[in-house]
Length: 277
Image (tube, rainbow, N blue to C red; front, side):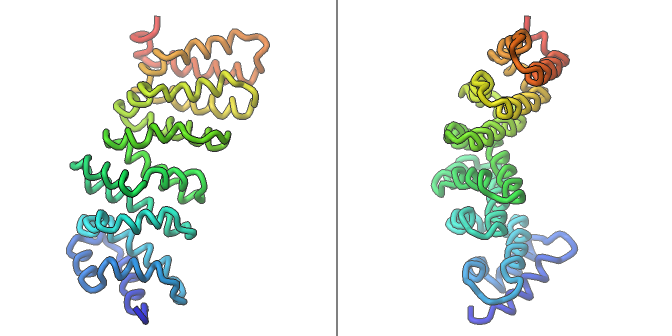
């Protein structure tokens, strides 16, 4: 496209339409401007003010419509490249596109899992989680949590969650485990069966860095708030670990007080005595 001005104006009108864009609206727009044309224009370095932001906003609206989302499986290479883009706006769009894909394939787990695997989507989402801006991190986390609703995609997420020896990345991995722990009881069960709670236990036992230990205890405090997680937390060795910290007179007072708060939160659950003697 030599002159993107017509697309830019139409995309701006579509993106900022005050009401909900229907499938008919999306179909009409894509009849005038095919999806590949929009993507190619976004990926071309045109000297047009506001072009990237306008096309990103337009594609977000298009993919939220069922008809627009139906084009995502055919354009997974764009999603794959978008998750690695230098532009944070494009990376955010790619994360949101994964969410739209999953929301529109929620009755076909196998198709969703195959697309996520074939295009290496999860590791790219994880990189967005680690290296993205605050906005990208938020939507990458939303996309990963959406993945956790799909039984097939749980197998994609959790083996990869053990990667990374860097302390900061390790904390992010553990935070990811906590977030997905809250998604559903099946996700919680998968975390427990894969011994991913031991990532937190190992870091607490390590205790070489008080700030890191406090960060992990904060994650454990969040875990203790999740109602369906009580069974899994109380049947792990975490309770014994908490007890040992509380009874350790040489432990730092800030660690002991935080541990008491976590224990109190767990013991306040109505169903705790169904699992703990």
